[in-house]
Amino acid sequence: MTSEQQRRGLDAETRAVRHMQCADFEILVRNFRCRLGELDIVARRDDLLVVAEVRLRTRADFGGAADSIGLRKRQRIIRTTRYLMLGKPALRHLRIRFDTLLLDSQEGPIDWIENAFC
Picture 1 (cartoon, one colour):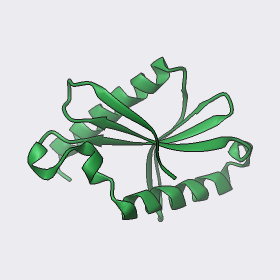
Picture 2 (spheres, helix red, strand yellow):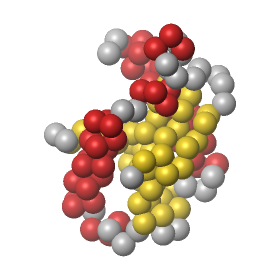
Picture 3 (cartoon, helix red, strand yellow):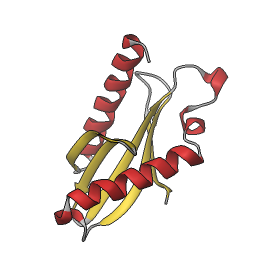
């Protein structure tokens, strides 16, 4: 990934974080990385833990943002979440939901898909 792509990705994640905070979510972790994969955003509201994958697609010729989250990516997110939970026992009692926040441009609306996968 080039530095310009990284900057755009971080900007998209920052927009997604603000969007989640406006919905009363507390952001617990951003960009959690381990050998199994990466989690973009881990947030909490009440007894709900949301693991959110943020996707930005600025070119439609490769499909929209939702098209970029395939089966292998979903499996990696789930495995990485399990690993995160092993190290954070205080979160184990929470319900877990996997969401996606899709951005098809830097300025456009955010499409928040709850329960995007399990």
